[in-house]
Amino acid sequence: MGKLEGKVAVITGGSSGMALASAKRFVEEGAYVFITGRRQEALDEAVKLIGRNVTGVRGDAANLDDLDRLFDTVKREKGEIDVLYASAGMGEGVPLGEITEQHFDATFNLNARGTLFTVQKALPLFNDGGSILMTGSVASIKGFPGYSVYAASKATLHAFARGWLNELKGRNIRVNVLHPGPTATPMQDQVLTEEAKQMFESLIPRGKMGRSEEIAAVALFLASDDSSFVNGVELSVDGGFSAI
Image (cartoon, rainbow, N blue to C red; front, side):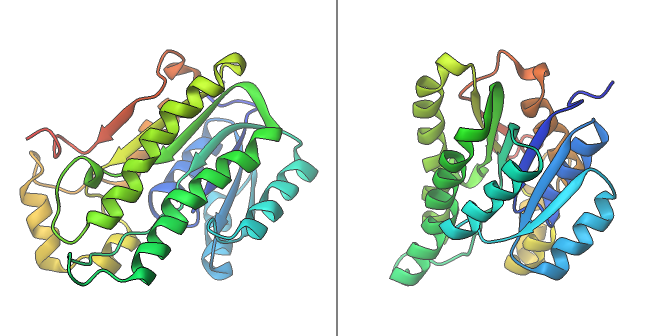
């Protein structure tokens, strides 16, 4: 029996990278998974890759109408949620002095506001004893030049987690934040130069980027009963990157 046998999971931003790897792993462990993505073509490819027990719902986690459509679909098809992995996010390097209102608003609208309303809109369908996890970033506990807005938006998630777990303790719903370190994903290819990738790899003790499957293994831990006594943590999955 898989670790998520019979569970229903929702993963935002699940059409690529770490979230896609997590969706695939959750299905392998017995879950039925709903994934979202903004591009229909990428979403269709992700559904095909996962292969079974998956529904793709096109949408932007920063758009509240799209979130309503997502959870209407979940309610219609399954009627309940056991695991919510709020993973949709963005990160763009803009140094202090060049930060615009548009950059700030776009970053916080998706990473902070979108995550908040993803969780809030999921709650009416949530089973007691479920698990909420959010994708943070080690950027929120390190100081990377040019990424202060991104880091601040991700640091917000731990504040959310601490408040929400207290509000949800009567339902035994756990809330945790997974902080990935530098991980080889399609999004990383879009935002980092080769020189930047080499710099980050030099700061990881093993000298290699993380793999999406390594992040997925920890997401599975936080989603499953294996982490039944883990609540309100910021779990860095970064090969020691943030420790040295």
